[in-house]
Figure 1 (cartoon, rainbow, N blue to C red):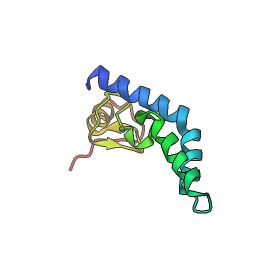
Figure 2 (cartoon, rainbow, N blue to C red; figure 1 turned 45 degrees about the horizontal axis):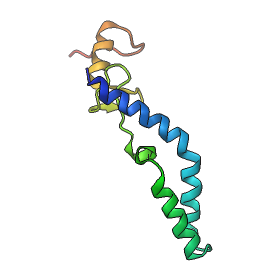
Figure 3 (cartoon, helix red, strand yellow; figure 1 turned 180 degrees about the horizontal axis):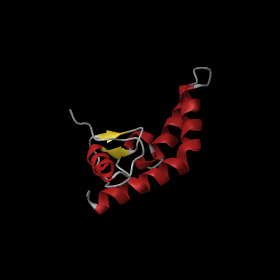
Length: 101
């Protein structure tokens, strides 16, 4: 089990990303638009820098929904390999069978 503080920190980041997503995309569009004047683009970059750092999407970390583990994460299942194995052995994941040969 991961540290509770790490899990909560990531949840707060997720909320911030959702809250500032529209504003961030609008400012990025202005800053990247070559038809705008240099001053307008520079102002957009300054406003973008004033937004909270944790509102950037690349600050999010994929974590297991079951255990909170940050590594060995399967995106399709939204869980780590360890949690997948435990739930699979208990028969809680339909269609998943432990292989043996």
